[in-house]
Length: 75
Image (cartoon, rainbow, N blue to C red; front, side):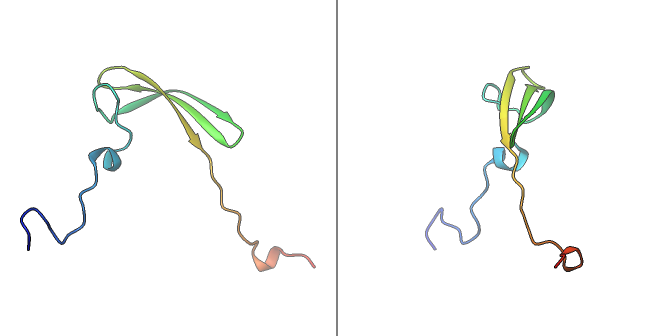
């Protein structure tokens, strides 16, 4: 075994574990100030709980279209 090399999984960055990190203070606690829904996406304005930086995020709304249950298919 080489020094510094492990056989286990690589550690995940803290921002991925706890959510979106604030670009100013690196905090991960947010308060949603405003939510707006547009076609196939949602826009949220969030305030950082630590430094009160206001950040706008755009989230894409995805849906999965599957088959209807057999009982609802009309022939």
